[in-house]
Length: 232
Ligand code: 13P
Image (cartoon, rainbow, N blue to C red; front, top):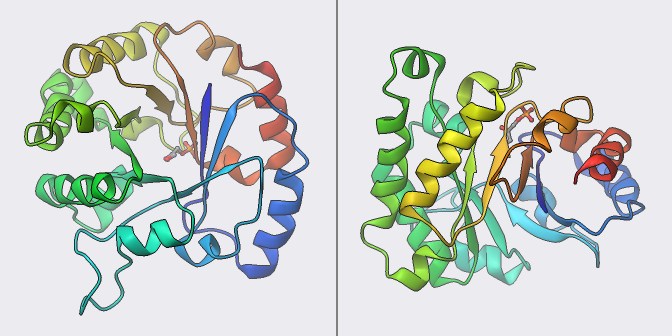
């Protein structure tokens, strides 16, 4: 299984050092991808984990104050990058076009995009969540070649589940996995949203999951270790 750790905007320099020491003591056969804040990328040190970023610029190197390009990320050993996270879609007003451009820059620089998709509670209740999810995928893949499409990892993160302690039913996740597979039959799919060491037994029974994208749990190495030991 793939387990991607999204630290979000957490951990300063000293805290990150201590955190990383703990993380490096974890023994697991699962593939761990650590996505720290951009600043902490340069402090990454591990021969067990892969390095990911939480964001990338949609532009190349140049006069784009405050942006970090895919080429720069690559030069720091980044091999994965979260893109289209609902927090960035919501708070940074990232558009479908922005996300599509970011995915292209990542692929050009040989970084695997972890494309997040997810619906709000309202969209689920009004039953148009499938359209929302399909649009979030289609807007990215329509201009890509098949071999580029194949590289993308899709993370299904229902917005109403992120940080709330609520997780969808197994059937709800399976339905979305099926939807993703219809467009991207060869791709890995992660589930994200309040996944933890207490609900992993339930999540273990979901068909079509290739791993998890963890927020809160990523910051608690001891609980993360329990989670990893319980994954099928
Ligand atoms: P939580 O695991 O804290 O719900 O966050 C999920 C997430 O947003 C990971 O990207």
